[in-house]
Image: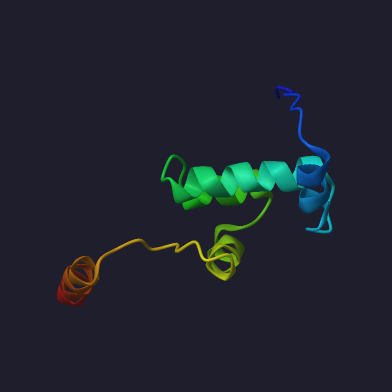
Length: 86
């Protein structure tokens, strides 16, 4: 594991602490969630990094406005139709 030191303004540290967890933990969580939102890591990897099961991560991300399934309506319809063929 690597350690990274960040210099943050007091106001930002105060905002991180409002999450009711230590600022380093809150910052780490935000980094993981953003990497997931950008599709740079999978939902499974994000869950692992946050110490959650994949099934706990799905509603957690949803509560934060981050969709677990990022498909257009057409993509969803196609995938759903294919699953009914099986």
